[in-house]
Length: 161
Image 1 (tube, rainbow, N blue to C red):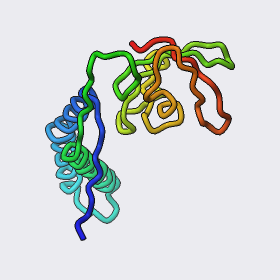
Image 2 (cartoon, one colour; image 1 turned 120 degrees about the vertical axis):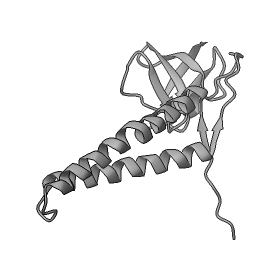
Image 3 (cartoon, rainbow, N blue to C red; image 1 turned 180 degrees about the horizontal axis):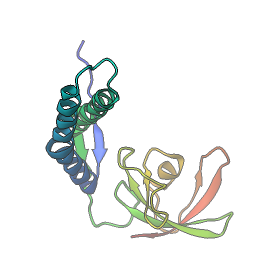
């Protein structure tokens, strides 16, 4: 029986960011780690060499991330970021109001690989797989939808940007 390969959904921006990270890892990080390993080996006894241990750990992290990105890129599906703004989809930026809090938020719907809701409160990137993302996908301006979180709440779609 053939193993199935997971498809990774990405926006065009997400694809480009991964490609940049991959090039940085290959062209900058990997050579730096190799140099650090060579310098640590030159110090002699490797059994009690903290620099060598740190370089080996860093090498393992870099190589693991390279492999992970290679797998994602090999199985990536880039979503069509059409300019139609009548329905929320992956790559949509959505302005909505939390009905209970009477507060407005703006988020961009991206894949789980690209999601980073904590880095910039003015540019939240949420996953299409999280409760809020699932509630938003397929919605239209004016819709009131329930977010099925631990404590469900309603939101109103104000604008698809």
